[in-house]
Image 1 (cartoon, rainbow, N blue to C red):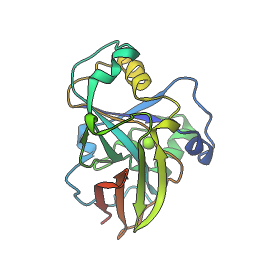
Image 2: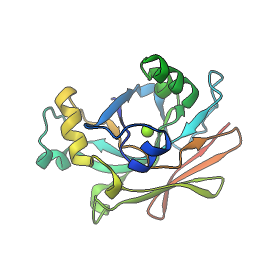
Image 3: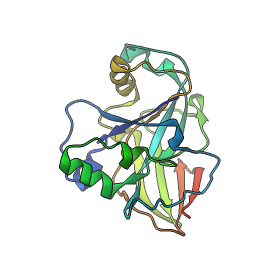
Image 4: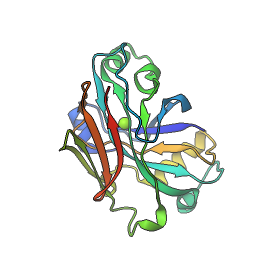
Length: 203
Ligand code: MG
């Protein structure tokens, strides 16, 4: 199982980090050891002083595919959930400055908390999915799938040109504006619509 994450997929988030709007999808990987499941606590790592949350819609891949055409892409995922792309922003900024990979900034242990997944059939319109993140009860990020630069189908088409998708893979589809730091004692709660699907205590 692998975790593929799309970066820079919402214009408002690209602007808040002063990045350029990409001309093709940007993606990176997290190892399977990054997964954090069943609402287990996130333990603040000693190697960073700037752990940030990024709430994202997550697709769960349901069959093997390579060179998937956009018009068939929707048949390769059957569940949608919500996850946090936990990021060591200080390590990422340093890597960006030096032109180095983001692996440790994005792929450290517990950097991919995921919540309960919903069957795709639960959604009336995949291009209109509201989601949000609360930090200690206050909403800090709000997104809608209609605002993605690259939609689910385009993402799957693009990734599968380079990497075979396999059953059980996860795709994080990018974060909207409002990313920010967490501190020990914080509680993160992520929702699709009004349904809370993920809760994560920072310890
Ligand atoms: Mg992200």
